Amino acid sequence: MRWLGIVLVVLAMLAAVPAAEAQGRQNGARRAVDSGDTRPLGEILPQVRSRFPGRLLDAQLVRRNGRPVYQLRILGPGGQVQVLSVDARTAEILGVRGGGR
Image (cartoon, rainbow, N blue to C red):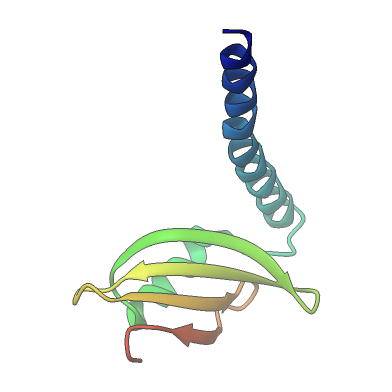
């Protein structure tokens, strides 16, 4: 029975790690926007959706060669998933994977 308690505690700790990582990424993105280094995703999305309509599944702010880049996963109208790399300062689409475009 003692082992069961230990296993449950370890599982609870492991479940908390992804939530903490997501919170850290969100805080980092907020700091980048607040500093003026990055445009808010809400300003970028209309420009992206004009070329790539669909539902946003996931968005992450990453750095590539010192440049802030939004990684966006979009579910297109035909059911295809596209992964877009978008410059977080200019909204320039840097790359597209999936969906046949």
